[in-house]
Length: 251
Image 1 (cartoon, helix red, strand yellow):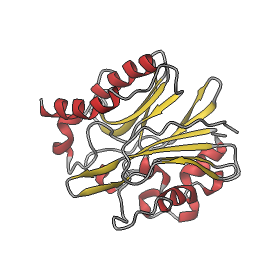
Image 2 (cartoon, helix red, strand yellow):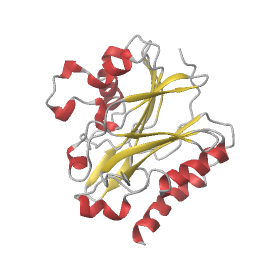
Image 3 (tube, rainbow, N blue to C red):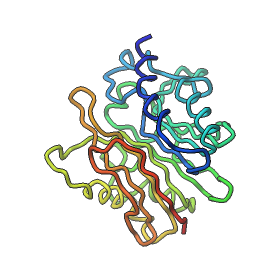
Image 4 (cartoon, one colour):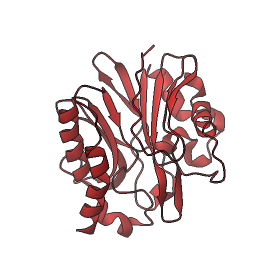
């Protein structure tokens, strides 16, 4: 099937990267990492929808988590078997290959609205030796439908109340400044959307797509930010396609 070949083509470069077992504690990939993101309708995305337990992405995440002895977070388009509802999701798998969480994107971007339903809400899980770990997918960080007040900070305030220590965010953030090579605008924007968490003992990791799909260009700039200080710990630029390995001491 064409969709399977497309997913396997995207998986291959990550499979061959030289990460060693035990080198990292978390491996985070972008939103809808292997399928691509720019779908126009339910019919367009239909061949790429995956099951939460046995889909290609989740299977890859389980195998990779066991091989690298780390947690894996990766986004994919999901179809719920019971309700036959579509979601923009990410899976969270531990080093034993156990599926800890399927998180469904809560705030949908206009592209998502053509095929997906809103997830039930923001969430965290408790991970030993880390504490509360939260998850968000791209638009989750923005005001709801871009109509809620900027200062509502729905996502950030949820994680303040939850005492989240680590935020992991797969993204497919579009490049609205294609003529600019400024690598700080986007991390600054993301940090501004997390204002209620500034000064709190929390680290945020964003993993954004780069490159393009047809006429759609992605903004890259994946980064790791400590919100307590705040400080930008590490970052890729807009066009880098790489694995950003960063050592972080959680506050």
